[in-house]
Image 1 (tube, rainbow, N blue to C red):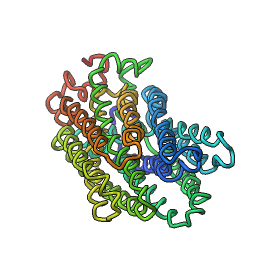
Image 2: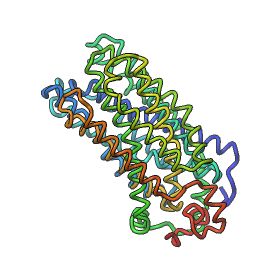
Image 3: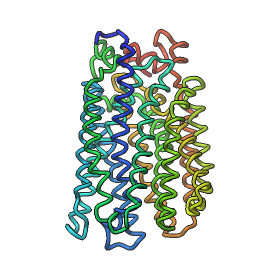
Image 4: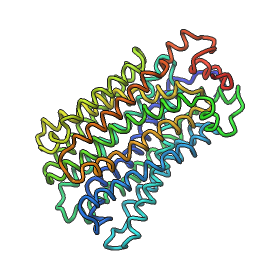
Length: 451
């Protein structure tokens, strides 16, 4: 592609589709593990522990994947800023696919002893490395293909991939949960992991046909790539890094609490409640597929800050009755938890988050910047299920957990409110020469002149 030439509409559509499909597949793999950690990994891989101890150990392996995410983000981000976004999208998908297929082949503790949980954690770390690079490559490729005034809408497409994956992974477990309990724990839980190999093949094929980001191509033609992009980011924009981490922490905390901790907490009430909760979660995720592009477009019109702060506030409100309503097994109450929390709150936050982070940093260090901000924030959030289980100690009283969650969301909202308005169209309109805002300077390639 010639530097400075806008991509053809057909090319843009292919990028949007490829990013959404690939992201859906990778998040499907990632959240298969999350659902399994809440439902089956405890008794299968940590059987010597108490019930609470098994859940803690299972959540620890879930968190291990998040710990590896910044490593994956930094690795793929480094090469993504120096080599390009497209090739990183393919490699992250392959890493994730191989690791997920491997989980489906693992022996359990009864068969392999302590080797079983060791292998489980190893593959979870590989998943984390893959997903750590996936998010940045997908959102950058789509956002940088989009016109300045529609960055929020374009970035919401790979975000929809996440919602599709959450729907698909929970639908899969709802279906296999219908198996007799013995079959479910023996071989049924393996099927979704093994079947993901087919999806990975499709995703790689689709992604191989996309074009490189025109904004990156233009930036590479006008600027020399930073030797170590992440070092430049940390030295020149530390305040923006902190803002990005806190915004991402608030986003990841919604998912960690509502799709992992609260699902496991409600599942203790029995198989029927478990099935109802998974169904409610699945419906809310399907609804988020619709609201994500809506909120992305709203963030273009009204600014990321307003839309995201609204989302943090709704998440706190939804958390207050969540424990009791989900454990009741009442489908209406379950819906009244998940729809506000995911369809509305997470949709509002996640729909604008990618564009919010993209607009904070210039093109040639942007991938590495996202690795530092988004991946670190969601990694910290992955420990909330562990913290919540430790706080409750097996008790059904969740007031301390609700209070902690509220504090995290308020801090995230304050950080976002203190950030510069990242509406790309507003920045460009006010600063067409690229003299002030990060977006304008990034478009003109003036990385070295950032304040």
